[in-house]
Length: 295
Length: 306
Image (tube, rainbow over all chains, first blue to last red; front, side, top):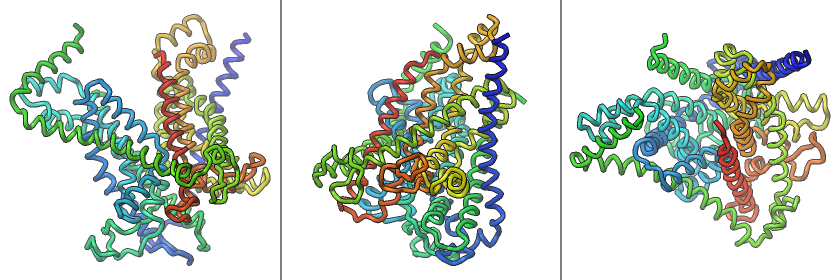
């Protein structure tokens, strides 16, 4: 009966592992949401941040986070999707394809602080963009590109080859087939991946410290001329994002309510990241059910 | 010829037939996608070259002895500076974090896939995958507000310590390790599990003698992935480790890592100074290590049996 006892013991150990993990993770989310949300109200979301007084908000940081996210996606989605199409449809097994695959792997495993340093050197200094939204978005493109490439390639490979052949048999060229048959069929999968990566980009801070900068001007939400220095749309102004704000408040802040600001910002950040993730999951499941015909 | 092969052959023939008709359209498409692929290669090469150039400048332009740089523990921004304390800090945090995250992560993965399958895969796995996406500053913030005071009040020291860094990073890589491990265990063919159960093995015997050996290369890959993430993590560690520029005496002592020093010092150095150049060398170490992790992952996963 010895092995029965060992088996019971082992089961207890595994349950314990899972319990430790679940409790930690639930505690994490619960802590951030409960300690942060009490501070989040309309006033917090819609007022300017303050550097030393009490009662600062996160209006500009929140806007900057979304703006950088959008600009990053404008750069990285077309480039990543086209790169993924190349790998799935055009690349022939060989040295060049290996080099591309290795590049994607290298880019995806780079520490984000290294991407930030590269951005500082190339985009901020050499290209003369300074600390700006555009430099930040370019750095985040480097960081986001490999994810989009992978998602696109996987989604394209999941399409049944008969669907492609049907199009080719009608005399449609390969490129036209890619555009009109394959990409539309892979679109839901790509969308899921893009939303997941949006959650990551939204929360990224290390790559932005040296590229988008640590400060932001009080924006005038009445000026929509992109070249005005107080315009929210100006891509050449330095822009502190929400996650960078959390870091800065915590490590350099001197305002009396810095805990509340940091916790409140973290709660808002987490909520948006969760929205991106859950939406991606819901869309992914809907497509899965549609394709497999289950339910 | 199998059905799949047949379909492939059909694709090939159809492609060939088309080649004569709309050549120009086809060529434009090819150029567009190839350019994108080329940009990805160019970005990788540019990062390697620029970091290599800036990082090696320390040794070739400022004439700093490489050996001294790697072994000295004084860091004052002069040409006598060495990075050993930070290299030590980075490795210490990475290994200690993996030491507690790997067993718990793999244990949870086994729980999800072998013990409570329904609940594990319907509830636990989606939640864990969502947690992989939680930003690292949030982990750092929790470290500062919860873990640092906990260590200060119950274990001793200032709280900002190697231990705090290790816990924060360990918790951070836990979902990563669990999620990759769970996928690896799920990929094991059900036949070999059934064979073990059919021979009268208990669940533990099946896990220990069949599942773990079969999934071992993939489980190792999961751990290395987690370690790579831990090694490159910057802000979460920087917020809790204390950033003291010397070797720590104990696990509750303050320390610093490569990433935390770059984060902290980069904004305060002048472009082109020795101090600035030293930071680029630290960045180069991070880059080299991320290549090393890729090589380890390749070697480990090439041993995959299933």
